[in-house]
Amino acid sequence: MNFTFTDEQQQFADALRRYLDKSYGFEARQTIVRSEAGVSAPQWQALAELGITALPVPEAQGGFNGSAIDMLVVMQELGRALVIEPYWATAVGIEALRLAGTAQGEDAALLERAAQGEIKLATAFHEPRARYDLFAVGTVATREGDRTLLSGTKSVVQHGAQADYWIVPARLDGEIALFVVARDATGVQIADYRTIDGQRAATLTFSNTPARPLTGAHAGAAALEHIADYGTVLLCAEAVGALDALNHATVDYTKTRQQFGTPIARFQALQHRMVEMLIHAEQARSITYLAAVRYASQNADERRRAVSAAKVRVGQAARFVGQQAVQLHGGMGVTNEVAAAHLFKRLAIIETTLGDVDHHLARFAALPDFAVATV
Image (cartoon, rainbow, N blue to C red; front, side):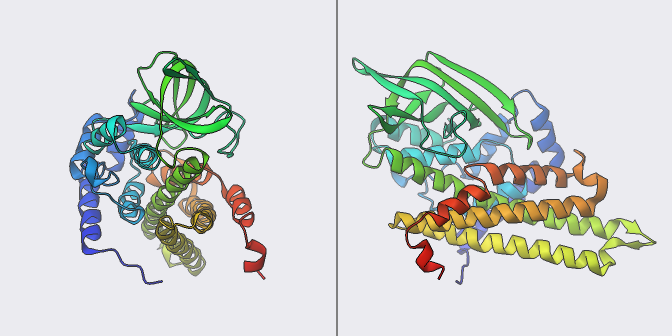
């Protein structure tokens, strides 16, 4: 497969990288992580001005109608710079509105505001004790006159406390449906916390909370899985950027650390290990690009197959490259003073978000024709 970014995509990537190199260095990131909010409003506004919030939004709502391939450009750069702003959560929320919404009325208004960077979104995929099962939904929606009320708990909602609106799966008359819940709705409790990679997550508890159903043609359980696949592709792309940054950091460190009077980068055994790290990263890149292409497939099983294959390979690469980088950095590799430790932590969280290696291996194997295809 010959995959080349267009001139426009490459220019967008270059512009974003220049901004991040200049204004979102490691120390600036650490300052934001240690802040009470855990995110930066000025940085979010700057990213919106660069156009990345408008990229996934349809043109009719003021966006650029960017595909999953276009989003690779953004996510790789954000992964490389370890950006902690709630972009992934908002992009996934935009895709949820695009897939399950009507592109009219309130749905269109939310997309327009998201494109301008006025609001942030988050999708509450999981519940306590559900592990990675998207369809283990215990949150219940009930009708009360012309209102719909939600009751239940959602756990580990990425940037849930920073979002203005949540996309929430719940069971209505026994079937999974998707709902939009405003942050200022009544009956909501938010428990915000920092995850080990410096990002933010939250537990959301709803108690007779007013919600608006998404009533598009593709709302429901199938849409929820489709949205999760989109989020998985973006995570894989972010991981590719982080893998690149971790490989570069490791090579640079071995050129400066000396043993027996010479840089350890000259030791052939360590050179072999760094080559293996590069191979893992390149294989992860290739399968991620394929998943981005297949995400748009009309064949749902083809999409599932490519996405799960990418998540497996990226997860394997994340673990191998991260562990090798820590070994080659020595004790410094696990301290908060070097970016390598934070890259490893972020890769570890990506590997366990929306399904780990074992989960996606099982999903891949459960797809039709798996046994035939492997003979």
